[in-house]
Image (tube, rainbow over the protein chains, first blue to last red):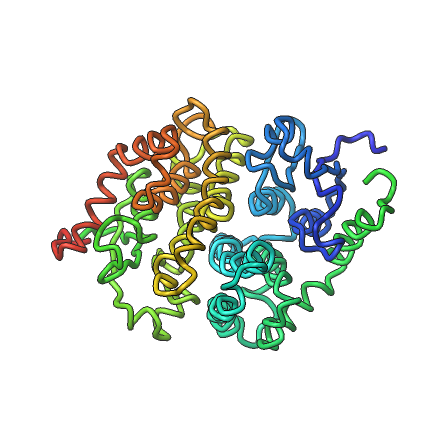
Length: 222
Length: 222
């Protein structure tokens, strides 16, 4: 009801995870909350996601998308970076520290998440296959390799490179997908890192907002 | 031999692909060539990549890395973006077009490349497994889904969003990994898109430079 236009994101009408916060709109909601940017949400059904109107916004027929005036974006990483570049709170001011924070964004999405997606695919798409029981340990070991390296770099620090950044936001979001697998518990420092992310008030608000959709009680105006 | 310090990247001493240009240093070399930035290369053995000295630069023990004065970066996507932000030639001037080009960078690395990595892993790491013959078609179909969507968006255009950008550079680089699979040939417009990327003089120079390493004939100073 604001007189200033606010950006609109898309999210699942019915998230496959039932409100666990694993759908990628949560990452964008979290970034919006961190920078204090109000937003609107348009819910999209699975059927509508594959239709031309939505594909015009997202070529791969997924969520989230981001619309702000003439600008239409897809890819949660790109949306988070866009917000981080335009608002304070998600990237350091120092140019080198900023570049390193962006490197962690890419590391989350293109080094740590791919083996996790393999594990998710093995569970979701190949669960009925005769090979899955023997193959799962191999896929898990690939995830463990990454987690071991990530834990070694994190060490005893709170965040990956100094203060909390968009790199941590995406890394925590990616690691959250592992909770049900138990793999995160094998690396206590990473479990604690994820818990620090979840404890942030901005994450709490983002999580509550997506959960309200799953429960059919989204707040008015969102 | 320049008196001005130039950035240094790392690359495989012996690339697993024998000089086909699929190692990720090629993406960074290509970006450096597009923007006309001279660079030095330090070759790293597989053993050295896993040692603390290299892990201090790259937490996941991989290549490429990028060193420029006090700045150390890893993740090819982050390095390409860093170069694109500091030099003309890889991102449009218009703010919205720039944000969309960055979205394509993320799309290449976090939407299109993961299923391709699954296919690469199936071939490289699971080739001796009893399930691989039956599983490969499933993995290939996941790649085809993405290619179909990408081809639909590209349409008859030369590049993904207006002029050539860092988004195209990464997308072409990701698609190149599919050449041996034959999947690219199933989508002639994407095969032509990749060929347009390869035809760029900057790509040609980058490819030649990495091939020279594989052949043991790197130019002096690189």
